[in-house]
Image (cartoon, rainbow, N blue to C red):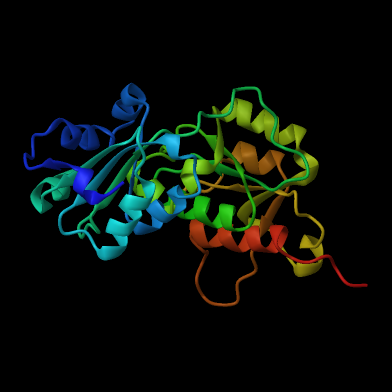
Length: 271
């Protein structure tokens, strides 16, 4: 679709601008059935999705050339496409320095409660994460190493929060999420105990030999300030990343990414 066919928006009070603001909140996403993905990286990921999931495109008059090309590539007959003034797009944007492209996308439905994690595939479990940037970054790392299924222990920040979608580089749009309360999550992990690696500073030190041939490991990462609760640490096998410097620990995004690499990307061990 040519940019000439995009509907011009000049009012900061336009309905589509208000909808973009509503998508910042969980209530607004639930009511509309949409989520907000902003920027060129997320838009490039959206090219891999079914076009029918892309419902609205918002493009700034001052968007980068790359964003303009992506907007044209993503537009289709059933999608509403809008060309906004800079002032209008800046109001809709969640970023301090917008690139000028935002998408309203139909997310994948969550995994049905009671579903078991897939066998012979990597799985990540995130315990009550609260920062959308951290969650999105971990989703991006998990997806990069082949993970397609994540367990989110509630209360948790939504993976469809606009900042989580952006930090995930769009990967949150195509990940399967299973949301579970604490007790149900712990019960599931105990059933899968033979493949669980729970990250904790007081766990056994991971080493390369231990991590070979465990590409289906279920890696559990804890809440940002508190880590995993005591009942979880007492019930599950704990592992830590050995540190040589004087820092006490790595943050959850770095620790998770290293664990994902160790378990999910090492080649078969040579004899």
